Image 1 (cartoon, helix red, strand yellow):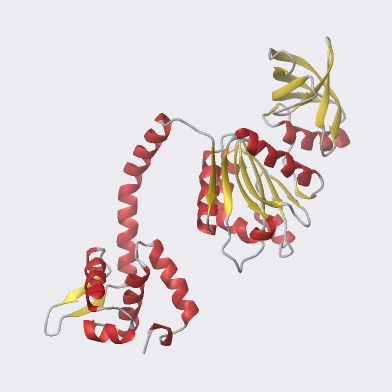
Image 2 (tube, rainbow, N blue to C red):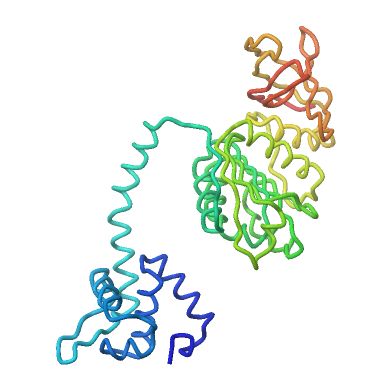
Length: 352
C-alpha cells in the first residue's frame, strides 16, 4: 500500500501545502499525516505505506521531533506518534509572535539603510505574486491602484482594507466573469474607496504610489489550472506604463462605489484627480484650488492658485486645463511630453 491509497488525495495535497507553510518538507508532511491517521507506528510500518528508504526516514523523523511535530516512544521497536495538531499550531503561533517584533525591527532597519536599485523580478508562482503584492500594499503611503479578479482579491483583501482605513486613496478595478457585483458592493459599504468593474479586463496589477507595481497578464490571472506567474516592477518609469493603462480601463469601467469628493482635499495623483473631475464637473461645476508642479520645459517649480476649466481623457492624452491670473496651462502627470506643467499635487479649495 502507498500514500495515494490513504484518504482523499486532493485532501492530502491541501494538507501537505498547509504543513509546508508551517515549515515541513513534503516528505515530513506525509509522515506526519500518516501518523495522525493511523496512530503510533514503528519505522517498518511507516515504510510499508510510504516510498522511503530507512536512512531517509531516520532523517525525517529526527527533523519532525526537532520541529515539535512528533514524539518518539521508547521501546522495542521504537515507535513514533504525532503530537496533537492544535498543540503544534499553537506552539508555532507563539514562536512566530515571539520572533515577529525582533525580525521586523531588524528588517525595517536593514531596508532603511539599503540602496534602492531598479529591478524587474520574475514572480514564478502565485504565492510569490501574492506575497509581493501584499509587500507593495504595505509600503503604500498615498495612492494604491488595483486591477484584479474576485478570486485574486481574496488573497490581498485584508491589507487593502487596512490601507483604506489608514486614509490611503485606493482605486479597485474588478474584472472577470465570476465577479459578484452585489457582494463586491456590500464589502465596501462603510469604506471611502473607489470601486469599478470592467470587461473583459486588461491584467492583474497592484500599483503602489504610482512608482512600484506587480503585474500578471490577464490570461494568466484568470486561468486557475496553470502555474500562475507575474512580474514585480520596482521602477517608476516602467510602473507608470502600467499606471497609464490601468486608468485607460478605469475611465471606461462601470462605477460600483465612489470615493467622497470634499474640500479641502489634496490629490497626489493626476490620474485620480482626472477621475474625480469627471464627477465634480457633472455635480458641482468649477473647481478652485492650488496646483504644485514642475514647468516641463524648464524644470522650475510651479505653485499657483486657479481654476480647473477643462479635462481631456483621451487614451493617449490625459490632462486638464488650469486657469490662473497669469494665464492658462495644460497639466499632465508623470512623464508628460506635451503639457506645460507636470503635476505634483493639487489641493481642492472649493467648488462652484
